[in-house]
Picture 1 (cartoon, rainbow, N blue to C red):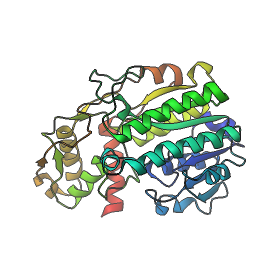
Picture 2: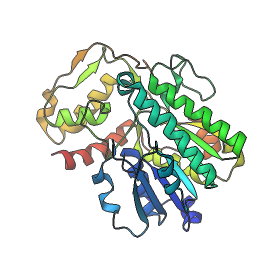
Picture 3: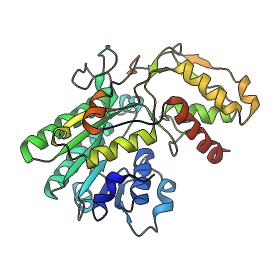
Picture 4: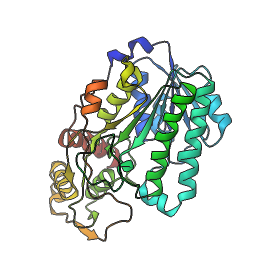
Length: 332
């Protein structure tokens, strides 16, 4: 998709950390489509070469295989870079509960390394992936940026610490930052496999194979599922905003609608049945709730609309139409 906002950045270089991951590779693709020079920094711990294979021979694309836990790798990636879209992190609440040390090393120490490298390279703007997990045990809906609760997992702690560090780096070193609290992003290139796979690609993969998806709890937990193109849009808005009042703050990156897991299952089954009628007969399974999970998540996106002119185009239904078409081609 072509974004008019990106035209002034045609001669600039943008670093996408975690650029071989789900969100990072989609960002790389969009930037390249808009003739922007892209540097991708990834250690392929969760990112995949196949996500960026189409870009490897692109004249505007450079891959640096490195780790954000290594300051020298971060500094190398910042050479001749003007802007940073920081997506590199170890996601997943359950992963952080099983291995809090590695999650902390990547998400906090790695984040701090990138901030230091950005400061030293005099980066113009540092846009980073924050998380809705930061809202923790705060129960009020919709979630508004200025009110959070106590974190419910090591992962949530790391993402909140990112926000604190970004704020300090602006106040102390005048590094302009914007944090985007992602709400359950889904779409093409999201891995359906592995112990920490997100619910939508995992359920799609299981339904395509006529396997019963498993829901934690009774299915009443709800999420603000957000299609990848909405996330690309808000990243570009954050990257290019000229409004000084929109900088050095946090935004919810979401659609602003709530969907229960039972509703999600019904939507997926209905959509996928158009490809294979046997999918109509697949039933759900249930198991105990998972530690660290937030019961309900719904974002207010008023702040992003007002200060970034963010206008998400894809709700859960239209986003699933796009995602399922992609998965059907790539998983069959």
